[in-house]
Length: 387
Ligand code: ZN
Ligand code: ZN
Image 1 (cartoon, protein in one colour):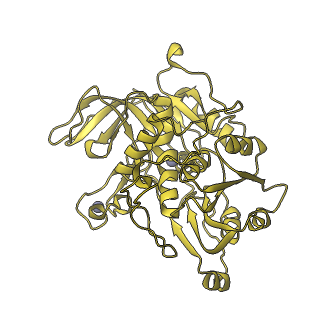
Image 2 (spheres, rainbow, N blue to C red):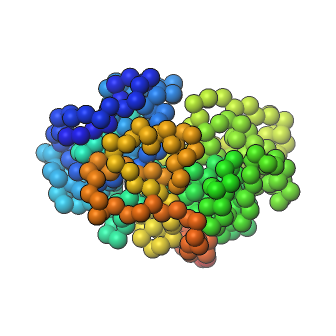
């Protein structure tokens, strides 16, 4: 099968023929239709982070495709012919305290797709049946792919932020992750302010429901957000620590910074004095659970989210990476197709025309009546009794 393989961290990915993997016990073999290109894949391919993948490996954690075969043992209801997504959380043990308290993303025995297991930049990928997530009919694979990481990650971040309808939520960085963070924040009913260095992205954010946009190259985002009263929650998907520091300083008293992006540069500096006096909190949010991704798909199937994306052949993955890095990618997400069948490809979806923004307050999942929302220490969160 064809795959994009990382052999060295200082070289481009190699498009090559590798053996098609065999599904082991409780695993499934998926014929990949689409796989999104996430910034994490670029960090993985370049060995940017403290824990590096073992070489060689195949990146990709937004793979979506059709189950071709299943391995021995319990396949958890997954059968050949089903369309599934292969998210970052490729495996979790199912036995530990984290796995048994709805926090499987913190499992210490987890295996990350496209990092510790071979990922979706290939014609076929093997996943664990318990961790693949079914994609509902009616969602295009090219939409399901960005939802599989960018979507679930930001949906979870909004839950962790505890955002509610009276809040101002700041989203720092409105690329692949951020353009979805804006939408999920808007769905809670909160006012949303989007911050970026790219004017076109800010226009996109506005069309997706941002009430305010701040061009961080033209004005100080901290002053601009404080002028709005300060943010009850700030979600940073940015790729530089300075944006996290700005996000922190833009918080209102009692506010919460949710760190989502993973810059190659690992440290940020925060003032202790203001943290204590302001009762501020800082929390990390890593991807989302199986259930979170099901909720993300359900929201999309109901037309509540819009994905801005371009499809390109997997063969062009190195050009696609360069375009993401130099800001010329054109849309928030690039989606790779290992098999390029011209009549299956949709034209790029750029949100330069009016779209249906998702900012009416019409929540599902955790935001729905009866849903349990996150309980930030500074809030009287709890069960949603009505909306
Ligand atoms: Zn990702
Ligand atoms: Zn576990």
